[in-house]
Image 1: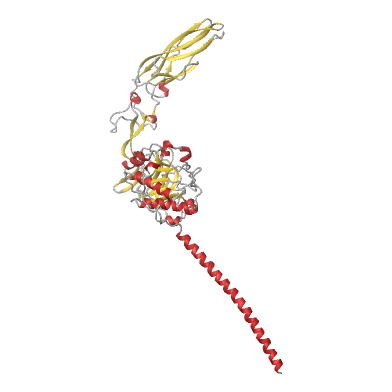
Image 2 (image 1 turned 90 degrees about the vertical axis):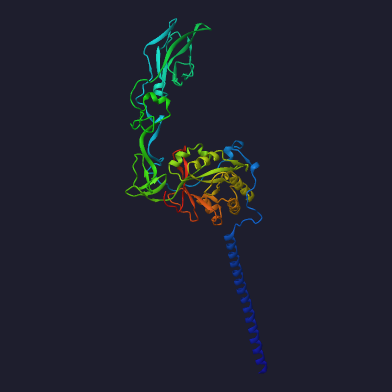
Amino acid sequence: MEDKKTITIAIALSAAMVLMFIGTILYARVHNRQQAEVEAELEQEEAKEGEDEFPRLNPDFEYVPIDVTNMVVRVDDVDMDAEDSAIHDVEVENTYINTTPLLPSIMNEREKVLREYVDISAFPDSYILNEKKSISINDSTVSVPKEIYLYNVGIDKSSKATVNVTVEDDDKIIKSLGWSSTKPDVVQLSSTSGETVDLEYVGKKFSGKVPVSIIVTYETSKGNTSTREITFNVFVENVSYGDDQLKDRAGNGLFLDKAGKKAAYVSDFSSNEYFYGEIKTTGWQTIDGATYYFNSDSLPVKGHQIIGGLPYDFGDDGILSYAVGDMGIDVSKWQKDIDWQLVAASGVDFAIIRCGFRGSISGQLVEDPYFKQNIQGALANGIKVGVYFFTQAITEQEAIEEASMAVAMCREYEITLPIYIDSENAVRGRANNLDKATRTRCLQAFCETINNSGYRGGVYASKNWFYEKLYAESLEQYSIWVAQYNTECNYTGKTDYWQYSSKETIAGITGYVDVNVVRESSGK
């Protein structure tokens, strides 16, 4: 009995030990798995925290301007086609169709009418006498008009004539016709040879006779030639007749003075670059504290209007009730010479002007050759000014250099808007392949240097560039200027300025120009 009892106890103990061993193994596995999961979660949280804080400013840098005088060159010293080649690849999503053209602001003034817009139907036509003069050479004859009449008014219909030489030459002895004007600075020839030549009056206040000669070269015998000359007169006359008042193409009478007391006549055309037309009130006007917009018929617009690519609402009385925000432009050397007086008169509130760029291949710092005249012109006409620099920095140090150049160029001007760094790709751009963190650090370095100089730094980029190429949240302490060509800006990050189109036309600027609006602003 005792042996059986002992055996039973032994078996029970063995089973208990086996169960304890299995339990220990299972516990260890579960514990290890839980520990691994906890560690993985911690790692993810740490990575996420690091990403939220990343990238950080480099503590080893002092973000203050440095002297870059010896680093900056003029635009003539670089290959412009290669070095200044931003790829402006903002997608056009949607645009408004202008219902009202953007007009300069004129208040009860006679508008200027340039000479090219004058109705010239009252001007006399140049004419050629039917009577001919001829020379005979054996059985051949060369004939030209006896007299030609041009008028010294500087328009084609009055000041140009096409002259044809008639050659009757069955024997084929006429070899060439050579033309010459005795006063080429008055009557200019389109060619010095041939049977048909255009004559044009190109003088200044000349009237009188200008002989024109044709030298006829003919064959006297095989291998031998001789010449004969035939001359006709070109009479240049003043337009001394015609009491008809000059008119613009719409039929409105033109004047020599703003008051409209001195009528302009045909005889006044050549001596004046422009005339004064009808009394107009156009463009944006503030009257008794209310804002209106007058169309080309001098009438205030009403209802919903698209002006300069932006939506506005006006009441039945013509008073502005809604505006999306102040409108501005950004310009560089690509717009060339700008008439800033006309730009200001068109209702442009602000301008962001490029001061320079870094060469996309060489990395050279280059001044924008139109910066000074642009910023001086804008400020002189009451337009608020900001500045931008097209970056190709690949290190924080280079970004500090770019900011230093911008600050140095702005010192003598009243800059009331931010100084932006323009971040986008370039043709063969040295900064095209920067990683997201490095690019963001460069932009931070630029903006910090600007801020530490007493200005406000900012970043310009397209909506997609902010999403895909930058840690945008790390930049929201600076001014943000977003390019999105759409009827609304739906970028989800911070937006201070919105570039809504690159194809607006504004008086005073040749060709298209980028246009922008201040976000969360009301009134014009």
